[in-house]
Amino acid sequence: MATAAKTSKKGRRHPLANVALIAIGLLFSGGAYAAFSSATASADEAEPSSQEQLQHGEKLFAANCATCHGMNLEGTENGPTLIGVGAASVDFQVGTGRMPLQMQGPQARVKPKQFSESDTSALAAYVASFAPGPGIPDEKYLDAQGDAANGAELFRINCAMCHNVAGAGGALTEGKFAPPLTGVSEAHIYEAMITGPQNMPVFNDANLSPEDKRDIITALKYAENTPSVGGFGLGSLGPVSEGLFIWIFGLGSIVAITVWITAKSN
Image 1 (tube, rainbow, N blue to C red):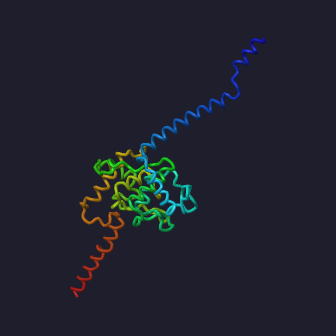
Image 2 (spheres, rainbow, N blue to C red):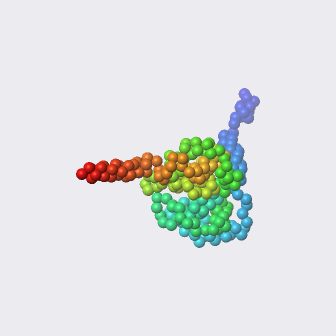
Image 3 (cartoon, rainbow, N blue to C red):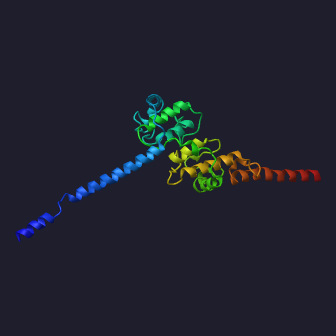
């Protein structure tokens, strides 16, 4: 009986064994996730920035951005945190003139940009140095030489409900709007897709591959540079502008002709 009891005690699992197994599982899963995130970030991030560029970006950030976003990018009640937004977000927001913000409102508006290309790059590098995030897109995806037909289909499925099928933009709720996409650089279109500015969702590589994004850019640039085969596009706003045109000029012409015929008969 004593031998059986000893055997039973030896075969019994220690009370902390389950805790140890859970800890080991979390350690391995966390390590695997960190490795995957690092690999993804390294693929997105641009080339390492020089110390001089980072110092220059830090000075620009402290003078122009820290009031709203905090000295350590932690965010304030006037602006969100920038930790993890990546260089692409900074290049888009600053490169299009949306930031620094001119005034509070439903969303930031495009205006003449305040910083030069080198200053924008320094700001982007400084913000990106805090945490991994979407990097500046590779030039090979910005040549607008992809499949325009596939890009147009992807745009209709994913973007046209806000930006209009012709990329002319459209109104959203509460004073917000989807801006027109004509005149926007290829880099900024790509960066908007991977960062999701304003009310736009993020289209990461699992949603739209880099080749798909290249095709969408190709379709937008083709539509922008190709004259409308139907004649005057009336702003490409669809039934709104077309209906207004018919109402004013069509009915106006009928009324004018009716008045002319009546006056002539009298």
